[in-house]
Length: 242
Image (cartoon, rainbow, N blue to C red):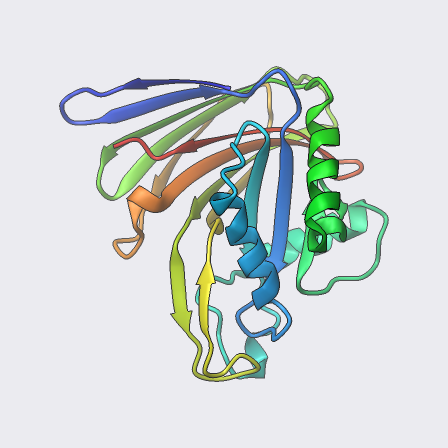
């Protein structure tokens, strides 16, 4: 993965290209209302501590909303993230949606509970040459918005491109529901999920930034997925430039 940064007086722009090898993409479906989810949240956060680079692994945490009825509304949850989970489960040939659920490159993955198995599976993914290349440009010209552009070299009608804006280092004091009294920490939390887009046409999006979001802890991900089986073919990530 190569990154170029240009920094004019009033704006900053990053241009990032996906590496030659395939990048592994982890999707965690979680909820602050789910008592079995905190261990998975902590595991996802440990990826940053382990310093696994984004040209090998990209992680995203989708907070689902179907646990909100228990008594605690997850402030990071959105209906479209629950929809994403259901779509991924169906297209991958499964029929069960649960939390915490981890998917590796679009497939249900249970090896995350064993570090040795996970690192072995990660190495296996990275050993393959990428079938798709992605270029991602991120420009922040104002405090309240970021301009994102992504383009892939895939012309297959079965591929789609998605964009995700994520935030790290988030904390919640849960006051109700199954995790009442717990202080929860989250990383790689998806704040915006955009797509699908045609990979071979530039996906140009201006994303508004909430004043409460910490731009120094945020990044953008672009990924290309096969719509017919849910497999993620390649991905690339970039921090917000400053």
